[in-house]
Length: 419
Ligand code: ATP
Ligand code: MG
Image (cartoon, rainbow, N blue to C red; front, top):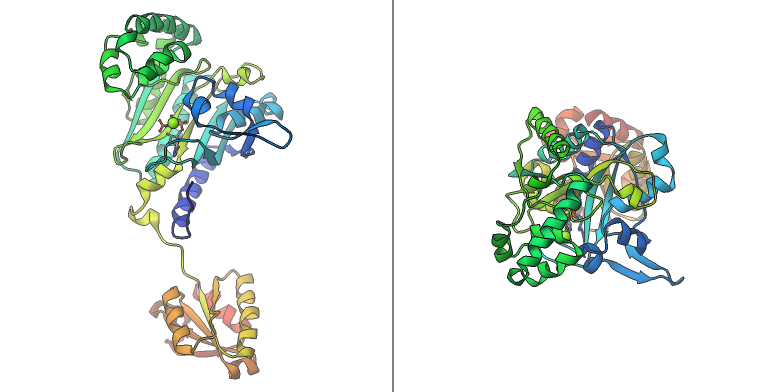
């Protein structure tokens, strides 16, 4: 689990603000759910047979002996909340969420035990064009952030009937080739056979070239639906490649599955993963509700953007740096800073009590455009000396760079003019 230090947070804030703006323009509203849920929610909402539930959850008994889990993803909680608060009876919901998720994984670059996601959930949307819209929102956000080397991989899992039929075929084939599979994949034959398709084991991957294909198992209707999605993406000019191995292993996932990767990331290349989960709301106790969504990993985004120029801009410096020395002067500094802050200016006070020379050096390093200097004499008169620290501030202040003796009110007025 990782600390985000002050030098890191500006980039995070930039990413979060950009995402929030995209969601707002797409008429998607934010939902915030607790970090902690009863374990049962994820067992049912993600599935016992997945790595996430099987191996990665932070699960413990609370003081009331209830099994609790730190959320490993956002979708199950959003769907729970939508059901619990009757949101779905008010019509389709366009929701987004963001925040920390927890998975007990092996930490490495782009993979942490506490990590952050933002995600989109369109609940009550069945048409293929909603798949296209969901993907477009993710694509445009990543493009706007300036993420390079983007690629969209697309697949369809077909309808639940298609999948059930394919699953039987695949299981029969995997059984027949059991000896040649890696141990993980052997185990998945009974628990989660579709996930064998995206096994990372090279020998298994080679063997799978001969496996029955999901595309062959699709009904005419599923084919037509998928081609609608592809045409929609083409119409928007969003490039994609088809990846028949891209699966989400659970029964309530259907039709569209997709991932967005960046060639500029190493082994952990996926920044966004999503798909259609028409069966989930019902699985969690709601009325049958079509839905599509995605989740994006912010650590990987930040890795991509770090050092990428404008996006990584440092926070703006304060407008004013207060240099003060002597007990009287120091007592005047905070009221002055407070007055300025109430007027919307950013102010830093030198706390050191050091000599003026040292304080001016610090004032300069702070990047502030102006310094307000208070010594004993100024304190006694209830004024400060306003000094331009940057060429541009002297110009906008209209003072040709000379020090000015000003009351706090005059100082505020001058600075607000100069901004
Ligand atoms: P991966 O194959 O990388 O483990 P996943 O299929 O487990 O991904 P999802 O559950 O689809 O990932 O989560 C969506 C996104 O969240 C991922 O594409 C990735 O960007 C990010 N993500 C997932 N797990 C982590 C993690 N442990 N640390 C950082 N980011 C993560
Ligand atoms: Mg994972």
